[in-house]
Length: 273
Image (cartoon, one colour):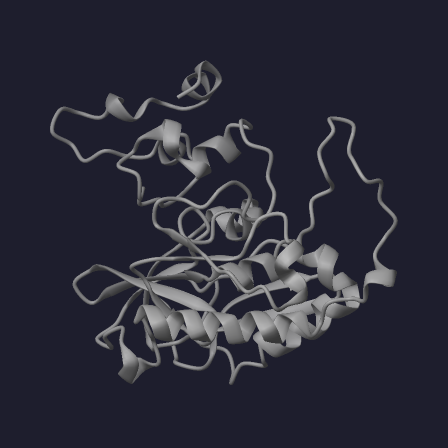
């Protein structure tokens, strides 16, 4: 933890001996809830780096982590992405472009997959269901806006909201920057297990084929080469310009892709936070 961070919030070891560790950003009142996936190791935490100003934000930057698999698809217009699309191993995936992971008895955490995260890189603050609200399979789980497009994320299963990621209301970029960790959406209490019967998939071959089909579908929205904005061959530091998904698709392509990836939901699930 940096000195600036330590000064800005109580240190996590300030809790009474034997007490469960608490994120420093919860102690500081910035977050209402945060279950750290990194054992409260602040130096390796994406959320800590962003909130403390130590990390320039951008969609899914950096190299793939130990739990990530880079998605190779050499036959699409998306091969020029500066950071390849990737998926997290060991989680369940749903065709609604959500991932799910069991985090306790009858408790699942849900978030965006990397394709959804890239498309929503310019999202406004998120609207999430209130803790205690009931969400219904196929109805709205979360809402945001990208430019003129309102995006509704459908719930893959029914359940009661046990927690929501309050940080997304203040820092919506987290969903794009760290979709599998700091940018998770909600945790649901549900008796519906993650698996094929609820529409989720985890088999390596099945998930890989599904992602490849989705990447091919996205490539259909890519703008032609002659419609790219004019950029120099190199930047001031000698590097090459980054190609993000919004760069490759353009505003019209992003709107079309959003309509395909996030079709209209069946209705509202319950009260929002």
